[in-house]
Image (tube, one colour):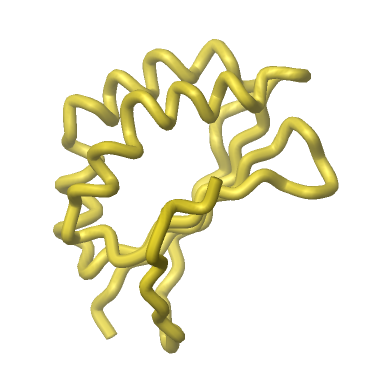
Length: 109
């Protein structure tokens, strides 16, 4: 399988997690929603830590991931979100070996 996947953990400054999400909503969500190379994307709040966001991204291939990182919106996101984070994100590249895919009918709010 030539897919590319990434787990990312963002640690926001205390009380800033919703602001981090707002920056993501403004800059990245529209690009992700229209990107056919993003096969799956989960933006999750950690239930045990009110300052942590955990993200899972799955791309059709490495080229799709590299193209996303080259988007102007991604650079704007990084610039605007950095002051809201307690540390740089923890990024883990992984290789999906099996997935169960379901199509969501509406965004989870």
